[in-house]
Each structure stands twice: as C-alpha cells, then as structure tokens.
Image (tube, rainbow, N blue to C red):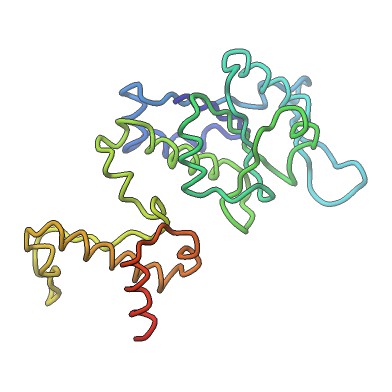
Length: 242
C-alpha cells in the first residue's frame, strides 16, 4: 500500500510514523509513506499557499495553483491513486471506509487547512472527502494520520496476525469484548472464570455476549446495522428486561 500525503506541515508526521506498528510496516516494505510539502509548489518567492476568499469573509483559503501542481506531480507516479481530501464537510471516516480503502493500492491524501481549499481542487482532482467527526481541527494532518493508521493495520501482514484486525471493534458492527491477561487476580478483581476454563466454545459465547452488552450500553445505535444472530437477538431482549 502506498500513501502520498500532501501537507503544509510535513514535520507533524515525524512522531506518529516513526514509531510502533507503522514504523515496522514501513521498514518491512508493507506500506510506503511519502510526504509532499505543498509550499514547494508555490510559484512566488514567498511560497504563498493561501489567499483571501472571494466574496469576503473570515479566514484564508488554500490556493488552487500550488495544490494542483503538487497533485499532478504525485499523480504522474501514482496514476491509479484515489485522491482523498480531509475536511470537516466530508463523509465520516469509519471502519467500513478503512476496509474499503485498504483494498486500494495507492492513496493520495490532501490535508486541508484554514477555511478550506479552493473548490476547483475538489472539482478537478478529489475522489472522496473524509472527516473524522462532527468537530473542527486546526488542519487535516491529524485526520491523515488516523486514516493511514486505520488503513495500514488492515494491510496483510502489518499486524502479524489476521485475527487481530478481525476481532477489532466495529469489524462485525459491535464494540469489542473485554480483555484480560496475567495475573488472574489484581486488588481483589478476578479474571472471569470462563476465560480460564479452556472451553473455547463457552469463551466465544461469553465474548459475544460481552460485546453485545457493551454495545447496548455505549453505542446502541450500532445494533441497528450489526450482524446479529437469533441467539444475539434473544440475549439483547433479555438485557432490555433487566
């Protein structure tokens, strides 16, 4: 998987991409991340990448010319890349979107800034606009980091075990069940006996019920689209009576 990130602040990515799973995935050649400074494509000696909006109003707008030049340069090498713009007005980024994007081979992510980008960038180049949620950040760099992280862990061999991603929250429409490890007792709190039983069928049943219970308590809206069995439905009805 190849990621090209277009940003005004490439230094922001040093920490997140230089550590942990993302760093190992890059070192192992499983993913490739390239940063492109949009200022390098500005035409004037001041490297201007923003200007006042036509029609007036507060804030500045990212200029079309530097962005167009940057996008076209990158796409010359990544002709098949899907172009994503991070913006508060985009569709919410979720696990289903991460799975879909993980099927791509190349992604170009434009980090929005200020009041946004010149609309002609969207019309000419952007395939998809994504948002992390219903709030506004100072820029799209953090959103780009999240997208790269969420998509990368779905790339084969990045996590080392396919089961790790398969059991994540949201993968089957539910929040994840609780996890425990050694020691079996800590300050009076015990690991549930079923997890120590060695009975894998009962463990799977317990985990499923815990996921259902947690989802019902914290994110009941997810149950409307989750893949539920008849046993799941029955258990949820029992919980609703408590």
